Image 1: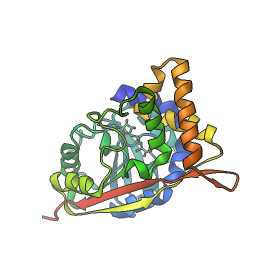
Image 2: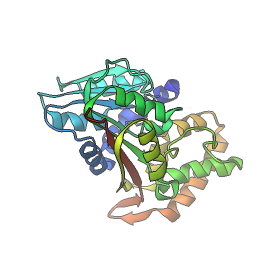
Image 3: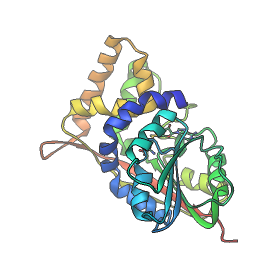
Length: 274
Ligand SMILES: C[S@@+](CC[C@H](N)C(=O)[O-])C[C@H]1O[C@@H](n2cnc3c(N)ncnc32)[C@H](O)[C@@H]1O
């Protein structure tokens, strides 16, 4: 798992500003759901290049602290570079299923698009709850249903259609593994959180052209990048043709570019105060 994400770290570094801009309103909603405010101690799990935690760092200010963590060391190296001017931000390489930190260390724990890739998401939430102080809040963002995220769903469909099997395979955890309010709230409740709620936030994905979309997204989506890297050029070309055709039907024209629909879920809850 960490090797797969290490391999896409350069693509994430090149596109970090783009991802953070696409997700900016949703990220503010994530931080609100986690109750992040001035002076707080915040842990960002599965932080990748750190966009959500860096937004949290703006809120907590110089009197607070933020730890950007990820299982992939190359991702953490990107996050550390992006945080180099912020003394309140530190980094750590670890799996969110086994956080090497004492109980009750943080006032808020956030996870932006990292929980759905974990083999045991209930165990991961229970582990996040362990490191929360009593009354602290946890918030996780996951992708909403595939058909509400054609910017990614169509690319996965193009791979699946090429081989006549679903991609990623149903038994493999992927970007849409926690794509319903029911599934996400169950995971948070079963992980021991109280007062669990789930909200939906629109996250349209813009690109200058279909070609730019096709070149950018596979560099970010770990499972997709790994699958495409292992294919012959003619197979990749056939998949590109399918994706570009489907994309031309799904994307709307906007100003001098295109826009795809996008949607995320934000699930949150708190550790009981006593
Ligand atoms: C889709 S990326 C999201 C990155 C970042 N949070 C963002 O929104 O820009 C998923 C990230 O989760 C990390 N990840 C996957 N499984 C993990 C685990 N078990 N523990 C910690 N991080 C994990 C990956 O290495 C990757 O950086």
